[in-house]
Length: 330
Ligand code: TYM
Image (cartoon, rainbow, N blue to C red; front, side, top):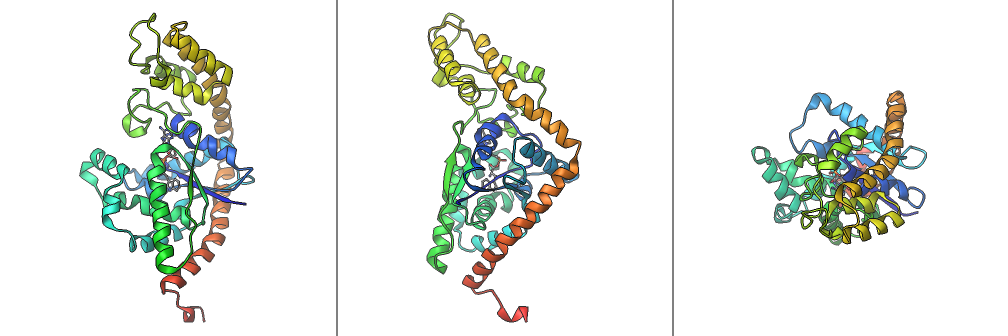
């Protein structure tokens, strides 16, 4: 069975962009692939972070993933720092990565602008650690949102460089995009992202979600209720495509184009469908939060299963680059 790897940062709030762009897709893939999903805490420290709340954020993130259906009977779920070989492989990859390639990465430039006072080496090196995450499992596919395509392409490049220099070791993994790979925020302009303050949280109460949807940007060309809308320019319609049933999507599109429905009416339908889908997840999060050992046990066993895989791969890598000392074991 082909192997899948993907990861999510424990940033404190999983939003519906993360959910429809990645997590829901991860759940769909578990029956067809051997899936390994990771809470990437070492990526999360590339921007300033609060150490005191890190454990809570890691466990909260894992709780949501499990509530969405990523339980240990269906996939491997673990925390990146519990398998330190990821950072070891990242160091090795550092030594075959030209600096210029990292400086050109879009996300580095964006994050550099957002965190001018803290442009640390880890931020620059972020894609190298991500490449190590993926390649250490020799994963064939990486389900991510559109913003991560460049990082996966970079990962393929790292695999190529390593293979050329040290002999074939890693496959070149391919991106798998979900059907909603790019969700904009409530501002209708920027990607939904915690740093842009434009998110709808997966765990927010229904009333709070409605308040955000009510004022969320729609088609910029539609000024009055009587103006025909352009769903292709409307982030609310993109969300419909992620949450509504096919016939409702068609109806909404038609009614928007003919001004048969106003933006509020359109948002009401979206809200109903969104709550129908995320309501049960919120209920499961509450249930699982009452049994924290269910989560910690899943993460502990996940890390153990990963260590079995990465031990063999790192042996092969150390041997190929010439740092494996056979005499050490004896
Ligand atoms: P993170 O935590 O920023 O995002 C997790 C996933 O959510 C997707 N996503 C979105 N999809 C659609 N619309 C949005 N507005 C939106 N915002 C976020 C992201 O594309 C991602 O799939 N760098 C990774 C974490 C990572 C990783 C890995 C991923 C570390 N190592 C190895 C794959 C393989 C990230 O962006 O996490």
